[in-house]
Length: 104
Image (cartoon, rainbow, N blue to C red; front, side, top):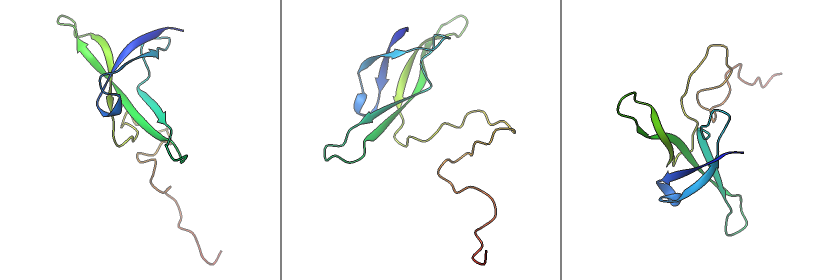
């Protein structure tokens, strides 16, 4: 597996560089989640970082490399919405449909 040294900006990982596994296209994943254990034994906190271009070439405008920036909300990115996909825009929202009947 190939790894690429990728810098992190913002949040607790600011200024660090980690070796991130790249996919078959040579790009790191769009989101990088880092679970941080709780000191008191509770559920871990998850830090979410989003991939952004580090820079572009002058002539063709190609991406020179990638960096991760901190996403404090940790929500899913908007992305492409296709009519046949069943993905909701807000994953925390209640599903649409009939309200619950009390009579049965």
